[in-house]
Length: 175
Image (cartoon, rainbow, N blue to C red; front, side, top):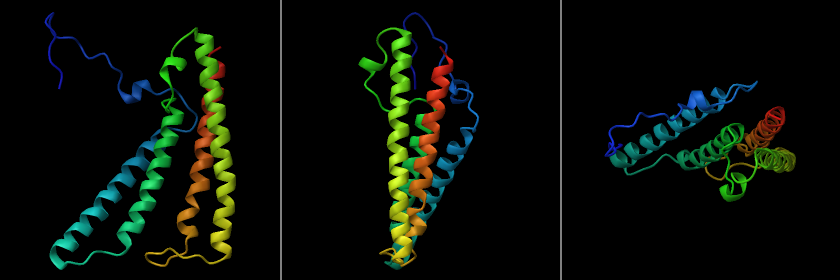
């Protein structure tokens, strides 16, 4: 809720999310819709578990395990959207000060570091997935193969790395 200033009402000039997004080759709607879907599924299974506990004093065994998995997916999908929109965490004192060339260089440097980090996470987590598959690890809660959950870490990490590479390229074109 905003209050009018003493000088009178001020028009809201903040851009809508669609106006603020840069043009990218892979639509940002992918992350937006994945976020909506994951949040919806999380809300539904949590609600179902609460109702089941209320009426039966028993809970669904699978909801906690699945909720943790969905929250990890949600964090990675949100990270991908933040990187693609250049809204990832930074120290604004350094990133927003200085000349435009310095800002662009810091943005590109940050994009390279994010791309390297998530490429490393993606490659190393592929080994984790392989070990989960090879040794037949099962989840502790419901006993499904653990790789069903862990396969998404390298996939989403490589997706974040690709979004960071795209950001690096877009920041270079502004020169």
